[in-house]
Structures are given as C-alpha cells and as structure tokens.
Length: 118
Image 1: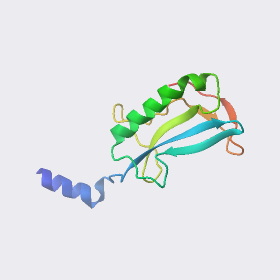
Image 2: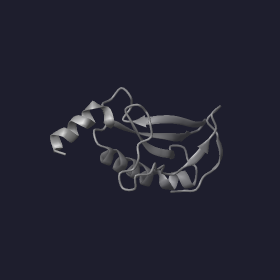
Image 3: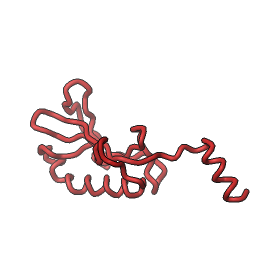
Image 4: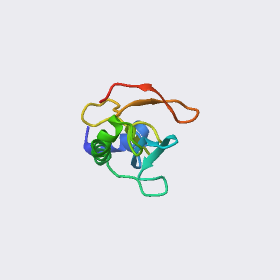
C-alpha cells in the first residue's frame, strides 16, 4: 500500500487522531482532593502525546516527596488524556499508565486507601 493510500484510510476514520493532550491529576488540598487538568481546559492543549507524557513524568517527580508525606499540593493519579478526556496509552509501552496512583472516593474527595506506587 502506498503511504498516500494509508493516510487516506486513517483520515477516513480507521484511527481517530486526537486533537490534543492534557495531563489529568488529583491535587491534595487542606480540605481533601481536587481534580485538575494541565493545561487547563480554557488553554490550548499539548500537541504531542510524547510531550504530555514527559510533562506528566516531570510533575510526578516534582511532587513525589510531597505525595509520600501527603502534604497539600501533592499530585496523585497523574495520567495523560486526549481531547475527549479519555486516557491515552503511554507511547513506550502501549499501556495506560498512572503516576502516583491513589484511590480517591467520589463523594468528598477523600482518600480511601493507597494503591501501589508506579
């Protein structure tokens, strides 16, 4: 198959190409946890999944010590999502990854238990 023919197949919907990427996370606050996205929804998304995953990894590294002591500002459940807020697989493994996973309950933003660290 010629590359042009392959690109036509992709363009016609065989594979949806995301329009951008964001890093999704939970941030510990004095009152519990809050969900967040970076860049925020009102800002332009990142245009590369590789860039988004590298950014997610750096956020994890920068807040890892705070997460271990559960200090305010610590980030948990750090992952990359596409333009439809769906988890996006890590380019290096093809698996969905979550840095610093922590189970957060749905009604009040409190931790309900620890998960294994990445």
